[in-house]
Length: 184
Image (cartoon, rainbow, N blue to C red; front, side, top):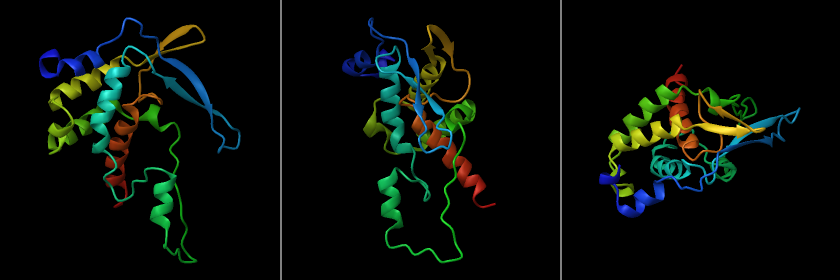
């Protein structure tokens, strides 16, 4: 990657000698009846945090392109302003159980590659080619490990909650799923 990146970017992405292992912690799901814990992997200061942040920044604009995408609660309120829901209609929200950890990594990578290769603005965000970004994202996925209770674990499926690459990858996957499912 050194030959494709400006020196400052390369050094920002390179692992630090003071890197710490990602840690697993639980975030209470206060909106759920039994208030279970959502597992979050804190990657702050980890060996791949620079790569994950840069890839997340590059991938961010590739997601959120569908008409049904809701960025956050403020975006939802803005989209509902002035909307009148008839008495025989209901406003529903679908919740996917453990979505991040259940997404097919290979399918998500295929979709990412398609979006990168068709992104006319990619060169404005990065000097990296789509193949370089794919190599970094694949490396990021292969480094998906965490420490919990003094032991180390490797995440084999899906994406870890708490990584900068997880949200855009999950959004890209779900947007493709949505486009296939909604017409039916």
